[in-house]
Amino acid sequence: MNHPAPERRPRRRLRLLSTLLAVPLLLPAAASAAQGASFEGMLSFGGYHVGAFIAADGSRAYCLEPGADAPLSAQDTPIKVSELPAYSISVNDAWGWKGQVRTSAASGQQLRQMNWVLAEHGDTADAAKAAAVQIALWEIRREPGNAAWIDGKYDLFRKNGGSSHIQAGKRLAVESKTAAVGPGVTEPNGALELVAGDSDGTGTVSYPAGTVSLAIEGGTFEDGSTELKISGSERGSVGWEAIPHEPAWSRLNDVRISGKWSLKQKYWPAELILHPATRDTEQRIGSGVKPVIGDNTGVLDGVVATFDSRFAPALATQVPRDIVLREDGVFSDTVTVTAADSPWPTRGNGEYLPLVADGTLYGPFDAPHAESVDPPEGAPVAGSASLAIDQGPGDYSADLPVPGASSGYYYWVWGISEERQSEEVRRSEILEPGARYSDRFGVLTERQLVATELRLETRLLETTLAPGSRVLEDTVRASAVGGSWLRDDAGQRIPANVRLTFYQSDTVPIRQAAAPDDARELGAVFVELTEPETWVAAPPFEIPADTQGWVTVQACVFNEDQSETALGLISEWCDDFGVPDETAELTVEPVTSSKLAQTGAAAGGMSTTSMSALLIAAGMATAGGVLSGIVVIRKRLDRR
Image (cartoon, rainbow, N blue to C red):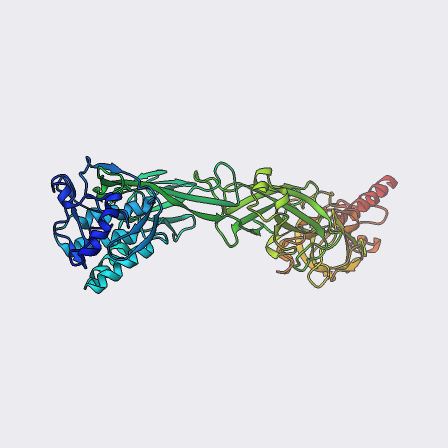
């Protein structure tokens, strides 16, 4: 702003007067104070006035265009403006500054800063503060085209004791850069923050003050909702829980939380009240516009928690029984499936990731196998089974009928192969592509067996015992049917303890499955068999002295006779009772004629007493002897 020349330099002022009038300038004598802006109350540095004009409407206004002429003419009606145009003027003022002053159009931020300075600090009767306001306005519009003019005035002020006012004005200009906030500058002091909880797929989200709503995708908030209304007055947090695998199973699942905020804001519009002079060549002066009070709204940046659902199932099995009966032929296994190192994936409705487990029953083997990672090459396969693992971790039972299963050891091996799963599960990549999760071969708890079944053949060395002979000797041999003869861990056949039971009958035994009730058990011997098709001699059996008639032997394999290690490994079986090769006749010494004479019979005839004695003697013999005696008696009677 260029003012009239100071009184202490009258000649200079007179010389410049005609030039200034050409601009033109309206001196105080040319217009009343009511019509033009007043210099009243300004500070003067070497005759240069700095501070607030008193506008025609009584408001305080300040120069907005560095270097332009003072507004001495009458003023038009104040107007609100949102721009200050660029200008360029030639200056040759009374204080020795001469040159061109160029100032660009004010930016929105400059207008906002000027508004803040004017509205917050410009309406003051304190001349020193008003001077600082004017200097701050110059600093806000400072640029290369007007800097020389501004600095020239600062030199003038310093020479006249105005250094402190310059510093105060500069500080005010600096402060305006941060204080003169525009719309939308007020924002939440913070952001959304996700924190994982103790349980997988749970956590909390913290939100800043000003938050008015939250929304969640891939989960629910702790009240079960997917949208929350927030008071916005204070910062806080709320719990959430993921709902993964919707609508389809997926390895990676996101929980995404977003929010909206609303905050009260006070901002300074890029506007000024302009008090224009009636002459366009004169300085534009202005005052401030009040700040705008309202709401600033926005969207909080969303936060995402990603959960990796990949997991590895683990299997363990336990057969419900070790021995499978041949006539039953059903092999069974209980498969326990667990999640190895991470939770089993589930959906929000409690549905577990469905899997398929495949089991292979290897066997029969004639000897036990050591535990190994894989079955031996070429191992026989008795059958296979599959299980739908659709209830998550737990026990699942499988039954596999094998009609006519051969004797031997059998081993289950179970596995879950990624390639055998449903297309949906495979697409999810929850299981590692190509992976197989399997137990080992030869695990003892996965072993079942079908017992050895032996058929016994026995043969007495003698089937007729002479009178006085009381010892029977028997031989036994066995053959395995329906499979091999099982071996132990050392590769040796399981010994079979065969019981040979001796029975006495008064008549020739009739072959049948079991001994009849009238057969008298005399005793038993045992023989151990370890080789098929090999005759083995049994320990001799001594027949009790009072035994007459016939003795037959029945061979049996009973569980109770087997060793503890062989118990159940050989099926119980008996051959028939009364097998001819297992039956021996006990003969008696024949009765001679001299002995018959001693009974009292006359020569050439037989008395009734003699007949009775002979019959009694015959009755004491074996059944064969009885028949022989009857024949002799009949012949003698015929001779008579």
